[in-house]
Each structure stands twice: as C-alpha cells, then as structure tokens.
Image 1 (cartoon, rainbow, N blue to C red):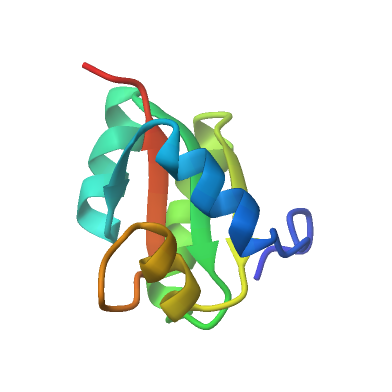
Image 2 (image 1 turned 120 degrees about the horizontal axis):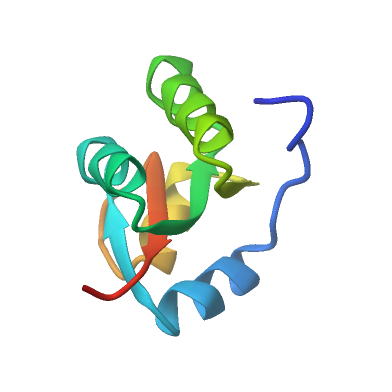
Length: 95
C-alpha cells in the first residue's frame, strides 16, 4: 500500500461513487483507461497482489489521477456489482 495514499476509503463511499458513473473493473481495463486519460478515480484493494496494484498506483501518480484504497477485493467486487473479488476498479469518463 502506498504511504501517500494510505487512507482506506469506506466501501459505502466507493459503492456510491461507482453507482453514479461509468466504471471499469480489472487491471487490464484500468490500465487502458489510465493510458487513454479516461480514468477519473481509481480504487485498489489492500489485499490484492502488489504486483497488480503497485504498477496501477504508479500509473495514477504519473497521470495525476486520484486513487484510494479499499479494505478488500471482496468489498471492491461487491461495490462493482460482481460476485467475485476485484483488485482494481476505476470511475471513468463516459465515451
């Protein structure tokens, strides 16, 4: 977990934010959204493999995109409306 963004966001806030916008789930789609400049805010699961979350956090910093940590992959998956855990998700601009 990144020390600059070490605050864990309440899952209710994540769910609310994702419900209001278009979003992507998963590292591959999220990296694509970051590189295309479509990601507005990224959510990363604390218990996800750092090999997945660290490169995404670095891309967020490079692209000046806000990111927040959530407690678990299970919580993030539920916030995205899926039955499996998610390591990463992002609210994106509708295109």
